[in-house]
Each structure stands twice: as structure tokens, then as C-alpha cells.
Length: 131
Image (cartoon, rainbow, N blue to C red; front, side, top):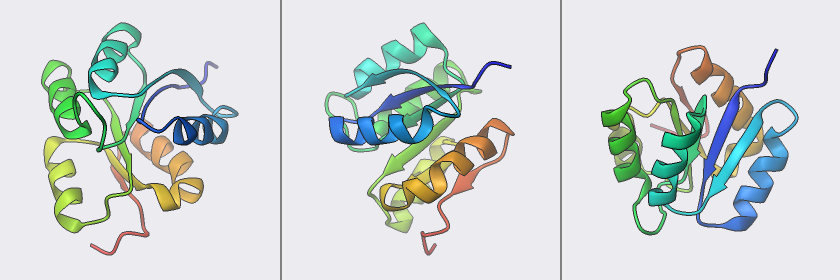
């Protein structure tokens, strides 16, 4: 059975490297990009099973990229991986239709579970968040 494909988007190369290492034993990381515009192009070209994206990215932020991805292909599965823990930010993200929300400080514990939940059609929000 093929491993699910993951597209990573974050403007910090160290984060991309850590997340890739965390995931590559269970998933196929098909590409990493560092801004929202590159995310849109890669998502269109690669059609990954799940997109992991930061909210704060240059050129096009994660919110706008997610809106465009969901408008073009509503079934696109997106998980935000971010430092933003404010309830209003989480609410906005879920309102866009993202499928998961993982805070970076909990990525080691939450990310694999989040991807599995989203692949099963469920929503995942880091338990570390007190909403």
C-alpha cells in the first residue's frame, strides 16, 4: 500500500526539515515550499493527500492560500501547523474549512495523529489548545 502524500508549506527551513523527519517514516513528503503562492502551484501540480501549512507565510498567507485551495477543490485536506494559539485564529481557520489545526509546540505529539484523523475524514485540533 502506498503511503499518503504530504505537501509541506512553511517559511522556516528548519521547521520544514524537522517536520519532514517526523513524518517520512509513515508518509511520503512530496514537496516542501516556503510561501503561499508556491503552495498553490505545488498543490495544483501534485494533488497531495494532505497539505500541512503555516499561517504566517510570505507572498500569500496560509489563510488566503487555504481559501483559494478550498474554493478550487473543496475536498482538499489542509492542516494548519502554526504557532498561533488564539481562539479567534483557530475559529477563523476552521471557518475557512481547514481539516486540522496543530500548534507547533505540540507537533511531535499531535502531527501524525492529526494527519491520520484528517485522512479518515475527521477534524483534528491540538488538545494543547484551551478553546
